[in-house]
Amino acid sequence: MNFGRALDYMKDGNKLAREGWNGKGMYIELQLPDEQSKMTLSYIYMKTADGNLVPWLASQTDILSCDWSII
Image (tube, rainbow, N blue to C red; front, side, top):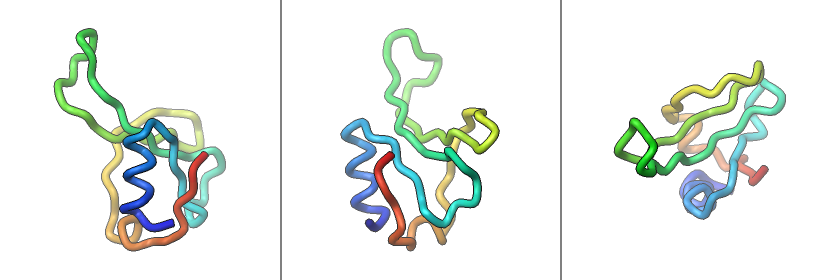
């Protein structure tokens, strides 16, 4: 699936990953702020291969790839 479609699925609450990522168990997810959040705007974060959660910024390769899948 392409990134545009993956983004739509993420907006529906799904976790997404790329087949081309090397790390096992990695995925991205959309975080929507609520009244308890310190952030006031939505953002995408990644679960890394070592289990950490970090802000995520798409690379050109990520945006142009068609190997996205729902986790």
